[in-house]
Length: 254
Image 1: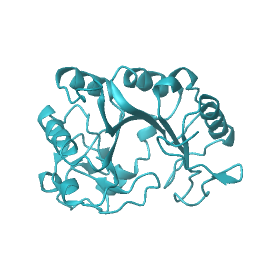
Image 2: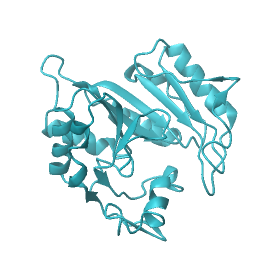
Image 3: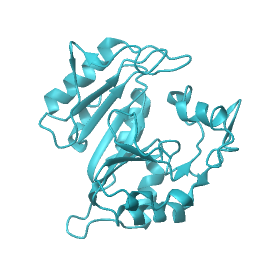
């Protein structure tokens, strides 16, 4: 497991749960799926999770990494389950319980969760309460987000996210595959990340799509993070939008 991450908006990845399955067209060129089927196919944490056709739907709980955040003494932003989905239908509630137990123990870190299955997350939180007793919300060091790629996925997943009581909600719109309007959801969001697709078969991102999302965030005063244009590699198109980098984080002035 990586101690430090090259993902621009996080410091470390915590792959305590790995494995997934495709749920929408944003999954078509998934980097985690590609790694699990090639370079990491014999790694104990990935073996059998993907083949030449893609994810197999199997998931794995990497218990040997469960306590990792408690051993990291310096506070950091931690991307949880970067090579899977903590709320995948095949992930038992007991695994999620164990992950939340660690997050509520090692509170010096900020935990960044992303899911394409916010309906499962909503149901999980309805049955199991991890709320701060003073606020009635998920604690502020747990940032709950959804990953979307186009208008239909944005409409569906952001609506479900808005039904979960979390102190910090966010959305990763990567890969951005078409124009997306999120104005009606911005009052429920604390952060918006946008990026183009990278790697083999990357689908291009129209600059107007990224500009529109930036402008929506500026108008609503929601922090905006532009990750990359994408291309053959993640660095191919650079990361500047209209001549500057946008690297706002939750809590930054927007």
